Image (cartoon, rainbow, N blue to C red; front, side, top):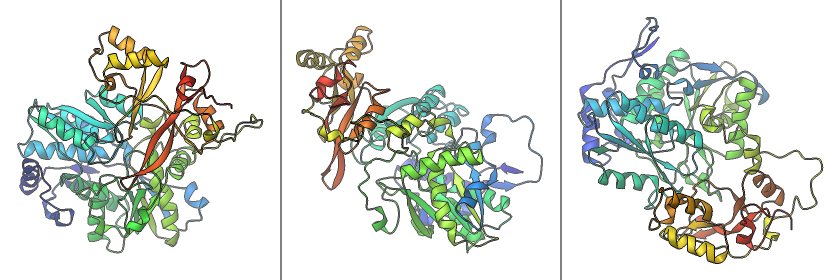
Length: 517
């Protein structure tokens, strides 16, 4: 039976110093492990009635993977640490609770304060953890996040601010927007999972100890994804102390720069669909020196493996779990019979019901091949063969009134909103802009971003009309994009819109193109 105890005075002082200075005061390699005092193993029975849901964080089950390991010919025992059994459904519950409690004990936050966190969604669980101390919560989220994840945070009372997926140091990034909000909101705090020492300490004190206890100290390899870096840093440090021969495998997706050596990070990938892993910067809490070997993962293999974990093992896990397992079946090939590999499964499928679980979404994004016996003659023709004209583009600072005038004058129903850098921010439609103004949800003088749809479908010039046809089964149009190198980075630029005739007049935006030539 696992239980959580209090924190040492040194740990409280460390966190207080970190938050007050708003700068990383402790590098990952300097974290004094004696500051932990968070873990305690007890043989007592679990209480039948818990005082609150926060007491159901930690002590997640370790499950043997039976079918998948055999299909890859693994000789070792393959185990999964199912972190989605935490109260909020993900491993981030551990650090959310730890950061909030440490900050509260250090006197940094108090009831009535506001917590702001740039997150991929799961660390927004701070909003739930803050309920126990009376704080409010704000989450600054990327546009690519799944709708269920956003809806759950809203249900928890977290105020959501959406930002485009761009470089971490861009003014519109979720990190920069979070710090801007902090300067504007009185009594607000950013606990900052990327720099907060409570992040790796939570895993050093609990996650790693649970692995050791459940495996009775016999663990030869651990495979962990590179999110903020807190999990892999905290777990690796504890295991290196207790099991020096244990090999730590880091998982980093294509499009991220976290892996070492840096040559591994060379790729043409510009978008990471798997949520919660991969960055275009190195988080402060990540100590890459404790990782023995890095492997790169990709979206397709990750999602297909997640679907296998669900179907073959009955584990209702998320996309990043597939990333870790797809790497584990490669890395564990070197292990022998009698040895053991542990794979961290960070979160559940709950947040991704509209994404990789859905066959149409998988086909639309090129991760699953559609089985169709009688394809139309145009099915495999490339999108670039369409007669695409230059699209009408609106800048984000254009007012709603001006946008209405432009759309009416040009006879268009919709247009993409694109920043000066070329970043596609979303789509604006004439009907939605008019209805929003009439309903009082927006003013004529508001920037058009107030009524911009941030969820939209994209298709590349090299993609097939068959793929476009699948997209148009659910969407009125798709933005046609092409990749271009800008300032040393690949960026997707808008080339036009493609849609079916009669659907929102979208064909007029791309030179009357439709899904058949």
